[in-house]
Image 1 (cartoon, rainbow, N blue to C red):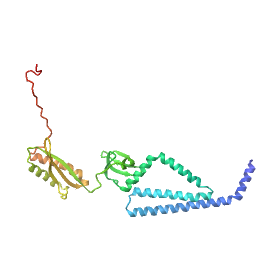
Image 2 (image 1 turned 90 degrees about the vertical axis):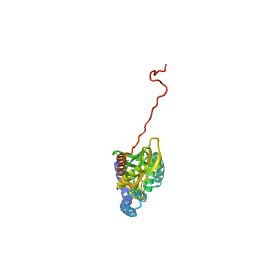
Image 3 (image 1 turned 90 degrees about the horizontal axis):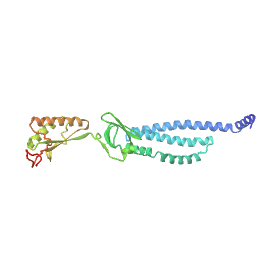
Image 4 (image 1 turned 135 degrees about the horizontal axis):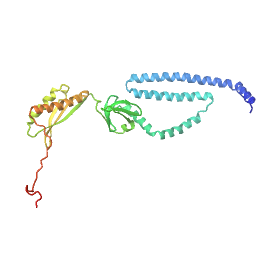
Length: 283
């Protein structure tokens, strides 16, 4: 086909099919524009409703809104593409096969996504909580659909895939407003146990951050090899846990020393038998 034939063919197409194509293109663009406005409006309304409900957190809210937006765009394209004469049936069939292949290839990522959804729905921890998960401890800095970020006490950042978290235990140290501080205090067997208990009790009562209710518990818990061990249990606000813990350790030691009550430490006695001092070889 020479150049003139191409030109004549193009003119014929413009005269016969051009108006319909232009009309369909205009309709296609109008569908996209109106659809985009509708989708944006629906996303804003849904986001506002989810935020007002206060039943799900911000991460899950964004996830739902984004998924809803993508689904609506797929539906919109299925409505708009036929206006350009594009048959979407083979496209839908191809998407099914492609989805299977992608799902198999990214099954680990999909596992993290599913685990992230379960974490966000069940809320075993929130941003700011101090937790132990998957063998790591730290303050939760971020929760997204794929991973959880922790900041350790020495300011290291740990990123843990959600699938590693959701299958195991989650220990949350700060989810409740109060915590119990447990100590074990050993005194010597020669000590007056009633006096020792009174000394420990005076230290506990002297720390204003310790709650009066539930009442502190100070009792003999064990007759150990080298010491009589008291268990010392008291409740405090979670935010004050370590302040109370350190104050008790220091205060009890100083108070027992002031009362001349010994805090024993393990000792080993070694006895020599059988050999005379003048002949170590025994010959």
